[in-house]
Length: 195
Image (cartoon, rainbow, N blue to C red):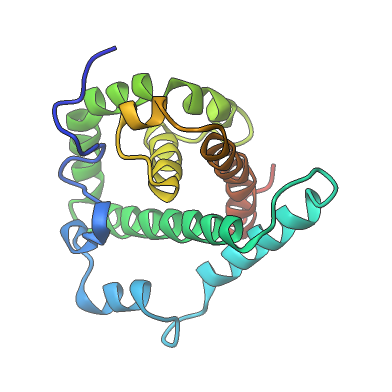
């Protein structure tokens, strides 16, 4: 396995979502305010997805010892919000005049970084690898988003930190990854996707 060149994982390169630098994606001030602050000026689309995903996940797994304490619910909320944020940003960037070309170039540039990330967190990628198949067909960058957001929410700093996680934090990370699969299903349903 190759070593990362810095302490900070930078999966996205020029498209950096760490520390909410969405202005680098080309969102205007109004879009940033809408995304970061409230939903007064739009339909509440993302809030409905988040609430539906968390509620249905807890209900479906209530007999399976799925933790539902405040700490776990906050982590599920954080995962949901960050996934919405990145997806929204990608959608806005892709619909800009140079969007499709920009995304293609970005993917080519980031290819080796995605491979490096997948190698470092292979176990987590394997847990969700079936999402690349029917009916979801999620992309490699979507998988990277899922894994990277889960790591961020759990506070994992780098591959070395990941390898030394205690059992409780591994369980929490696995809960977030399991929730991510449910999240994708609910997200697609709200987008009108039928499996």
